[in-house]
Each structure stands twice: as C-alpha cells, then as structure tokens.
Picture 1: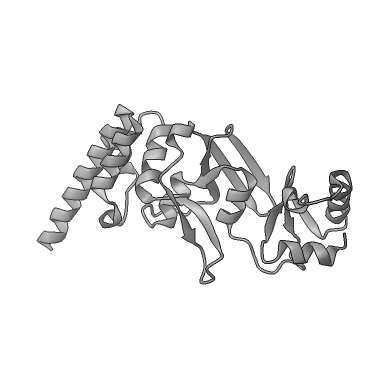
Picture 2 (picture 1 turned 90 degrees about the vertical axis):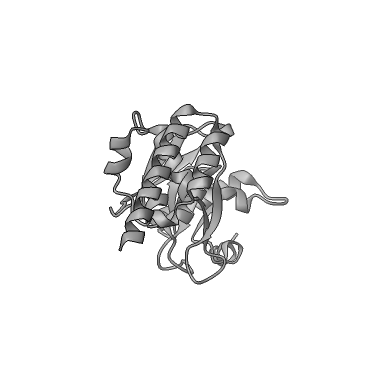
Length: 215
C-alpha cells in the first residue's frame, strides 16, 4: 500500500485504528510492518498500539481531543470534568481529557494530549450523545449529557455526594441542568449515592431559580 492510498482510506479522519486497513483480503503482518515504517519516517504518529494519527503535514484537519479520546479506547465516551466543561457547567479549564469506559482504568500521554479513562460497569454505560464539535457535521464525538457527566463524577469520587463537594464544584449555568432528568438518571443507576447527589443538585437548581426570580 502506498501512503497516498492510506490517505484516501483515512479520508478526513485525523485519527484511525489499524482495523480500518484490515478490511478484505489483506496481509495483517504486511499492514503492521508498513504502519511501523510510516511512523519511523514521520508520516504517522503512534498514539497507542493499533491507534495512529496522520502527521501534521499530511492530515486533512486538526483532530479534536474528544475525537482522539473516543478512538483511543473503545467503548468509551467523554465525561467527568471534560464533559462538564464542554457543557459550560464548570469554570476551570480542563487540560486532560477525561472519559469513562467499560475497559480498565488507564491513561495515555500522547503528542495530541493526555487522556484519562475511568472504569464503570456496563450497567452504567449510557447517558451520552453524539455531539458536534465543529461546524462540519462529521466532526463529532460521544459525550456525556451534563446530568450523566455529573453523576459519573459523583460515582467515581469518594464523598462526592456531599453538599460540600457539590457546592465546591461551583457549577455554572445550572439552568441548563434538567433536574428531573438528573433524578431519573440517578434512579436508573440504582445507586443510593447518586440519588442523594441528584436530589441535592436539584435543590441547588431550585435555589438558583429563586435567585433569578428575585433579580
């Protein structure tokens, strides 16, 4: 395979897996060897075993961190602080892209950024949507809804259902949180910790609504 042929197959994808090239009657050993040569020559960047990025001079566009996150570990979706920041719920800048996955907890530091993955059970692998990341419709990634991102955070942090923890998050744009959906998600999880947190956040939403009405 020529590099020009690879670029045609990859298309506008800035990040891809080697499985994309193993479709049809191909020699997987030859494919692996060719990928290694392109990495060595600087045409590709190896992000982890079986996951590659087209090097900057050759890529059709710059990758979004969420696209990289979805591709590095499958199945996964962006959640926790990264999703909360994406939805405008926390003020802090997030420098590590955080996701949840049914695979093991892991971290990858790559030339395209750092990516953390936290393990959750398959029973909690829901509450995400395909979000558009740019004006082009094909630039999308799986991202937790704001309510699920908050519950994922509570689930994975000790003591995160406390009123003190939830208030120290300094949640912005609480009007964008669907309190009823948050409680519904917590009930669906079957976890008392999440239900306690959801009810506390629902009260915070009500408090903020009262403040807006007084203005």
